[in-house]
Image 1: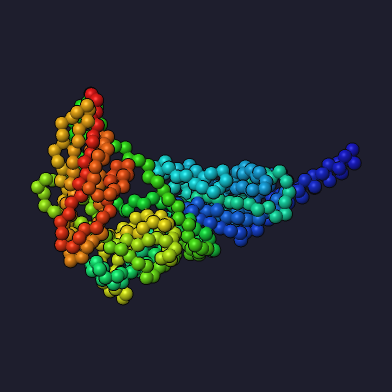
Image 2 (image 1 turned 90 degrees about the vertical axis):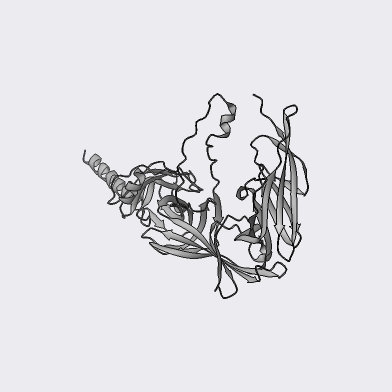
Length: 440
């Protein structure tokens, strides 16, 4: 009996030592860090090395900042199928539901559903600031296992800003001109933790900030038995496409601060001047007056201009001259893919004006009718100008172009004309459509 008690005591001591070893897993930080920053959130991804034992054990993560949404915590290894059995933060209240965030199983991406709830925000605010204790199960022992940790932090945000300096005479069509471009990204880090040597990717859509509230819609009575009523119903907006922009790095983000990080710098890039007619700005009126076109500065987003990277949308300031002493325009720079064109709107041009006219439609024959349209351009300048027209025919029915007086490119809903207009002249662009009538 005494021998049995000795053996039992030996086994108990061994189990106690093993349990103590399992509770003291060594974490070696200092690996690669990355941030994917979206509107109001950031996905943090870090590479660490762990010394693990086979079976279940506890791992202490001491650098997870307060405010991290631990319901999105993902721990994975490319070599070993680790299991995250549970977690808790020392001194934290009970965690609530995540606010519409879901991290993928590999920790590489995060999905966010707008308006999914607000309980997670309150829980995140009361999440505490102590270390995070995780229960992890490993099928093997390892002295240096590479582990990826990812989680979402709310409160991050970013915005892009540009400063453009036009060199040369911006309003003299025949004079050569170039521009300098400086762009930077301002990132808001709400955490009490600073991020050192972190790689950054930005996620967002190209919509400019809202300008005031929408006016009251009023009331419109529709006949539900008429198929034509669908032309007047409010259309469900298409989901916006979000784009990703990878920044050259790594960078440092101080704690609880706004930081400006360089995005792009280019100098002496050649520019073109063009005048743009957008059909949405020119109502169809057979007797209406001419309205000014918009003058645009265009340059190539290519490596030849020391650019060639996707540029996120953001606010821009356009200056005339090298001393930045003459502000020409404050504008919104839309998203610019690589190997495309950067377009800077300089506002209305009173010396180049246009009007849109429409002919009466013809009588329908075999379910089709025809209608002609004319765009009139008036150039009062002493130089020839470059013209771009983005024309959307005011017809919701199916249509095809029969003929056009100038070459064009056919989009899904638009026709695009590019041509030159001679100095001190009036010229027109005409096209004719064949339209299918709906069957009632």
